[in-house]
Amino acid sequence: MTIIQKKIMPAAIARCVQRVDDKLSAARAKRQTYGDVVWNEGYGPHDARVYVKSGHGCTIIDDADNTFIDMGLGAGSAMLGHAHPAVVAAIAQQAARGTIYVAPNLLSHELGVLLKNILPAFGGFVFCNSGGEATMRALRLARAITGRKKIGIFSGGWHGGHDMLLVEEAPQSSAAAPQAFFRTAGAPPELLDLLVFLPYNHPNAFHLIEQHKHNLAMVMVEPAQGSNPRDDVGPFLKQLRKVTEQHNILLGFDEVITGFRLALAGGQEYFGVVPDVATYGKVLGGGLPIGMVAARPDYIQHIRGGGHAPVFMGGTFSANPLTMAAGLATVRHLQAEQTTIYPTLSRQGAHLRHTINQFCATQKISARMMGVGSFSRLMFTDQTIANRHERDIFEVADDVQKAFYWCLLDCGVYVGTNRVVFLSTQHTDDVVNKVAQAFCDTLAMFWAEGMLTS
Image 1 (cartoon, helix red, strand yellow):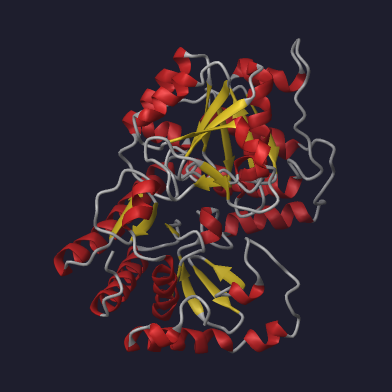
Image 2 (tube, rainbow, N blue to C red):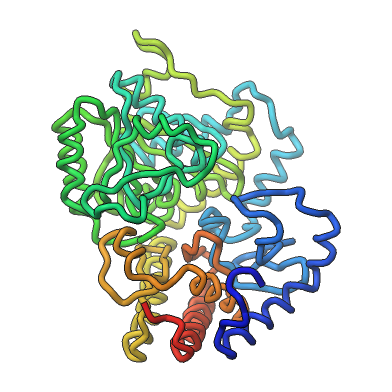
């Protein structure tokens, strides 16, 4: 057990950690014979809690045959649940016809036409292979359109693993003027000169945009951040739209999480704000790797030149037919069932948050669950927070949080390493109640042992 030393844990939590450790250790010896050869998600094999061998509906099964309710869902990608019949059938049918052509395929055009109906403000779409690739291409497009170099992003945001945006807020930063630093070794520090780091959900963001207006190509924001998902940021986003328009700065929405999840048309539909450029991923791919850049009609023309130098957007596996088949099946299902799917998921998300928050308030436990629609995050504090900056000030130590999610596995609930809790169409009301009970039971144990004092 490496996340926190068992010897300094209260006995009840140490026993819980040991139970989970024993449960997961059945297959660990077999994995260790291969050594540390695969490194993914920033973690080595020795850090991983669960090695998954299969998933169906809202559950996953690990290589020790433990079954967990999956609240990670591929970082929110599997909105229809694992192995949805329509998606599986579409993938199987296309696989028999070939998986990669590089030459254009009709499925990509079918998906594009469908998306144009759902996202009419955009003039076209560029497919790639991840949300990170999409944001990388969106930055390039914004610079080509405006002739400016700098990009504005917000503290607490996440825009993928490429060097340009792999930053976070320095711990001693001011809430009104956060300072960025790279969250990885190997990123050239000179890139920070091309960023304007803005305070999320804070009025000083607009003053900083005004200050840098002549150099900003685009301001990019997640309509709802995974680090502190909330439904009260509509006014902030509307003001952001107004300020960027005033200064001829592009507004970019990173909808990799929110796209097709908050609503069929994502965050722009949910909050009523239409950006100039948007990026997508996760849900759109139906569980296969995907990214997408969308832009207004006059902006999308820059990709082919349109009197300007063209903007490169290609890639070998971009718009590959296998992913297009999965994406088409997913979006068709979401569109056909949208009047049922989105209200149901929003109701379930609200119920999950209300149940946990009511329990914490009644028991006087210093924790609250925040969220919007079908995704949430547990905050290990009962203080009202406006952004991740305030979250990090008030929350308990990260080691305690890691131990909490480890013990949550003992209740049969899996939450991904980003700690965002996602719902799928396969999570029934009974399953949601089980998840809520698991959170409440684990919170009660940690509170009773004095582990949740801020």
